[in-house]
Length: 184
Image (cartoon, rainbow, N blue to C red; front, side):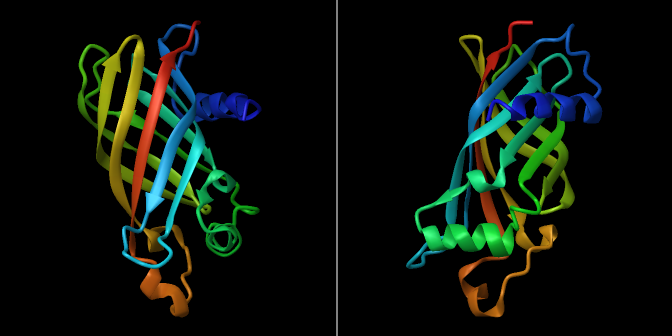
């Protein structure tokens, strides 16, 4: 995963105007993103990626998140294989990213903040607006946690008719980032 941190910094440098030397930044390389259908079924559609990288510029509230698609693990290995080969096409689209801004971020205040930006998955960029996530400031660390919904069809994912009843139109995405201050 270390090889992706320079990539993440490059993505941030080109997509979000940051002065990397003069601003306070917080980083994680082991954030967690989970997605879940929340359907009661014999084999639930649920996966977790615990190697998510994120960097936050506290002065401007800009954030960038990077997850490798093959990093999502399922309890059912066949489901994981189908996810990577047929739905996410992770060999073609190996990563998912979010670059955006926290509109009401304050380094002095733990609260629910609104995140807006562009989520890229499966080769599709989707603008997300005012996603409420909890931001907790504690012991020189910043925690970002919460859940939101995404529409599967917004990302050009084709679900075969035979399994449509097992995969809902909306999927729940949970995020848990524990960022620590970078020493500039």
